[in-house]
Image 1 (cartoon, rainbow, N blue to C red):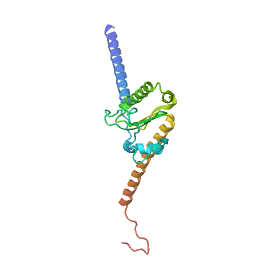
Image 2: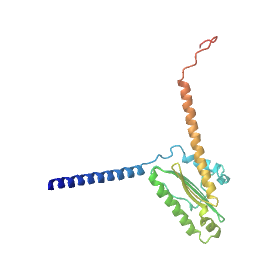
Image 3: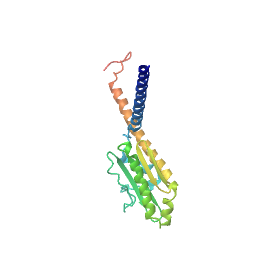
Length: 211
């Protein structure tokens, strides 16, 4: 009787251990799935992005042959992302006594950089609020939540501070989409040409001479 009881206890312990192991394995797999890196946008060319963005937003008003993508000569609106491995970024800053516009877009090197990028953009907003707290016009722009947008599109983090931040952010997303579509279309055309080259020439029909 005692032997049977011991066997039952042993079996119960083994079952419990198996259940715990299954739970642990399940948790590990769930964590691995959540931490799995999603592919980063490999099409969008950040170095050419600012020109496309300016075409799709009111920032086109700043465009001229000598435009460098930055009219914030004092560097007040600049954010340094250079330490983020594999990341590529562009930014535009325009500031005067009446208003300011800051635009940042960063193609992440990997998804783990997202929180760092967003924090730096948020920190820049806090810095500007403190710097211009005694400037009514600039303070008005900086303290209206509608004038601040941070979003992510296809592996690219977009940050905007402007009186029309929503419209500019939408224009940035449109520019990203348009550039992606142009590249994909060019790749499809290239593939079609390769397919056409590999196809045999059509057989001559009746009355035609073969070359």
